[in-house]
Image (tube, rainbow, N blue to C red; front, side):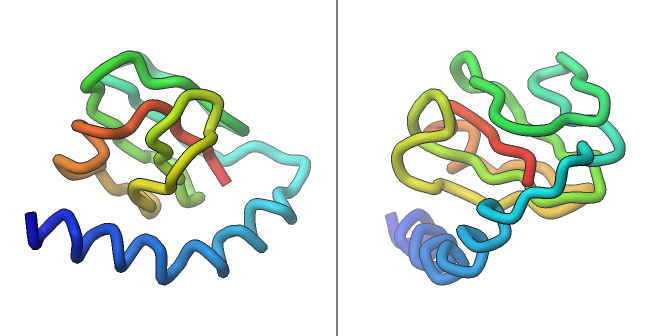
Length: 100
């Protein structure tokens, strides 16, 4: 419980700065791959729905924002940096991922 609360507080702390980054998304896609339980998306850009308990692995050069609702709406659950993997919170609650 404490781990989840701490993770949520940390995510909320960076939400404002990331919201500005998301609003200024460049026209080009991220370079690399977004892996959603083995499903690879090359040079991803935008929002991808996650279909239940999928591991999210960010092998791009950009941040991936994980949301608790489809279509990259709802609460921001986690930010996965370049070459990062979503933790249990993203696995349990993540329903969509946005490549910034």
